[in-house]
Length: 103
Image (cartoon, rainbow, N blue to C red):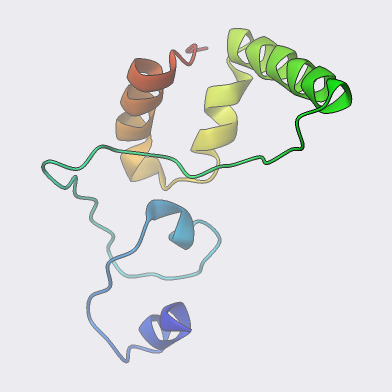
């Protein structure tokens, strides 16, 4: 794919989401830019059939997520997948948009 071509130096620049670089061995310098006028977002979806069982499941998941947030583990789980150079940007975004708790 595109990362393999970039790794083999068949291109000098590539525009990717930070998570796309998380488990790569690319040694080139990485710069991160915010795009003016575009809201930052994190992609993640869970689709369920509306039933009593799935509502209980979602309540359980929400309780666990809230517990991880209060322990500061939710933020750390996200940071593990981003380059250290942009940890402050990710932290600012998550704390402002989602009220993620800092350690």
